[in-house]
Length: 154
Image (tube, rainbow, N blue to C red; front, side):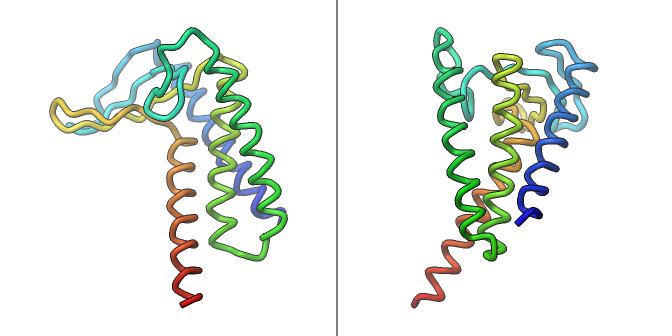
């Protein structure tokens, strides 16, 4: 069971380290073009995914902090209960690590640092970070696991 929490800890460490590097190297709003479709940036997201509720007055920080804290407790419970289910726990461990990484930013900075920025011409994907990536991959694994379980039932 410790391996799942170790995976989460690695995600948190990578997330916080990369955000630290960006904060040291970039000022807010700065862009560095790496390729015709990819930039490194420093953005601050006070909302949730895709800056949802970012323009609100500040209450969203505590709302998302509460939701994340509850999610961390539920995910921890699920990992402990299902620690033998590899794909399920991989997904949960990645989501947990990503959630904790972004929660740390939200509590210490009041916003989440985003720095990965993909685009095609004038079409831009919202900036994201390592924690967001881990959450997306983790959710993908959880979906895959649910489809595999559904197939095994039938």
